[in-house]
Image 1: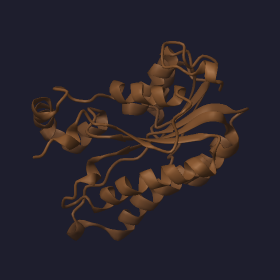
Image 2 (image 1 turned 30 degrees about the horizontal axis):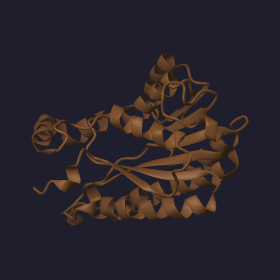
Image 3 (image 1 turned 90 degrees about the vertical axis):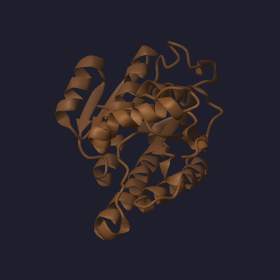
Image 4 (image 1 turned 30 degrees about the vertical axis):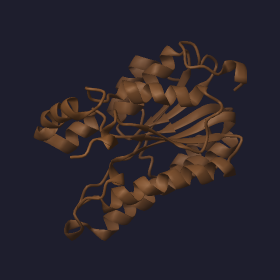
Length: 250
């Protein structure tokens, strides 16, 4: 990727290939759509084979693969065996854990925390050779765990760990860049599944209280992702996108 190729406008990813892990729904799918709109090529990875097929029918990627990204051996092998080099790898796979301590199964907690970290380490290890110099490893995390609350121990620990992981990897895999998107509430199918019948009330609360006066959507996060991919000066940092949610006390 050259400096002349940097830029976030339509066509800004022409000639570049983006691997989206978790690319069949929500933030990953919307990012894939914006990559195609910017003339980029896609490789899509997702656990749900049917959703992945629908995404592929829409976006015509170079290739797809259906497997659980927390199978780190398979993930690292898949990335390493992609033909040639790629320009960016974005990882959206994974979901937060909101379980009170008294109800927490320690094996599950270890899997949720350790599995997420191991997945990103696998991407970084494969990305050292697979991603072109100046390209990006882009992780998606959250901001919710910055505010302590019951049931947030595992998510809070991950929220704290991911910026440190990002900064350290940015040094170790340079000149490949490593960045983190730290998202607040985003109106995705995952949010709907977590909130159930409380979803609309949460949307209304955010419309009323957020400084931006609306709910953050997948397109907002995808636009940030493309900016990070195309701005070659960005590495080693978290980029918050929450509509000002952290500024609101409630």
